[in-house]
Amino acid sequence: NAGVTQTPKFQVLKTGQSMTLQCAQDMNHNSMYWYRQDPGMGLRLIYYSASEGTTDKGEVPNGYNVSRLNKREFSLRLESAAPSQTSVYFCASSEGSGGFYGYTFGSGTRLTVV
Amino acid sequence: AQSVTQPDIHITVSEGASLELRCNYSYGATPYLFWYVQSPGQGLQLLLKYFSGDTLVQGIKGFEAEFKRSQSSFNLRKPSVHWSDAAEYFCAVRSSGNTPLVFGKGTRLSVIA
Image 1 (cartoon, helix red, strand yellow):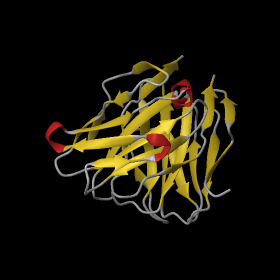
Image 2 (cartoon, rainbow over the protein chains, first blue to last red; image 1 turned 135 degrees about the horizontal axis):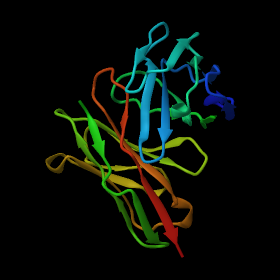
Image 3 (cartoon, rainbow over the protein chains, first blue to last red; image 1 turned 135 degrees about the vertical axis):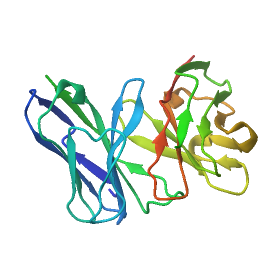
Image 4 (cartoon, rainbow over the protein chains, first blue to last red; image 1 turned 45 degrees about the vertical axis):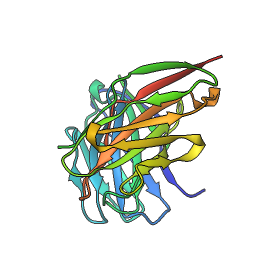
């Protein structure tokens, strides 16, 4: 099925461990985004990639890095996980970065850091 | 900077009753406005969007929203709520430039029999 695929769906990490969240879309979208969702906080932007080869920081980038591997894939890396990074992470894509375009979301990765 | 306020954290309605979820935005020019729905354990699904033209927009699942520039609002409505509408609803805004969506904190909808 066409859409945004995130892996893994669930993950438990120990403090200080590293991991990469994977995201791939098959809709030939230009722009991709990583958000985190915490109770009562809505969705907050971590990083985004307006087009292949570019990445920009969002509202909460500290502790994260991203790679736009190609047009399809946009990964999020936690170099040294902290309990404050316990959250649900959503990847999204859009056809363009302009105002008219909405997002297609993945189903999320639930990450717990202990 | 753009911002979105959803004043209601949680709303409970009876099945068959009408629904209105409030959204206020802050942005100088005409914004691009969106409503998304998130069912438990799922990602977000686009319900509807507004960027110009008729201020009343229709979306999926029987939802509609009205853009009111004078009130900086984009409220979501449904005439008759079904139990399956229980979910969390997010309003979002972006400018005409290359800026990402900014989301409100969401309104959780509960539906009772």
